[in-house]
Image: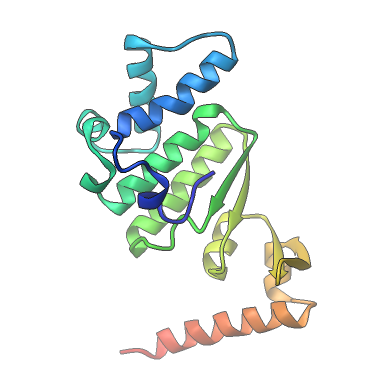
Length: 181
């Protein structure tokens, strides 16, 4: 699971390397292959490299408040596949990020799920982000699915009134941004 705000999802009193180590050790123990010492350190740095964290040695020693929001989100993303899940749940993982970092995180998620053959459940209200990251979409209203199908089809020809309203609002927002100087 990758949460919307990694600063609240990460333990503020625990160094980053230790936080990444926990799911690695739990999965290794579950598999009957305990992980510690240099092997654990290498696994931590490998996961940090997989999510393109710069200067992994420094970040591993840092606390969450000592790194940027994008780096914190990369740490949270590194922790998720540490347990080798079949499903990665990402709840608004790009909401608090700037446009450039958002694009990097979306590319990273796409790459990870493809490389590790995971399914991705991406939760978001940002329709352009949804359209760029998933193949299929389910539109919920008050916790009930009102429409589901291929993302291109649903966004091009919404069948439910609520979906049509969402798509129209997204188009109006895009138009308003385009009208800006």
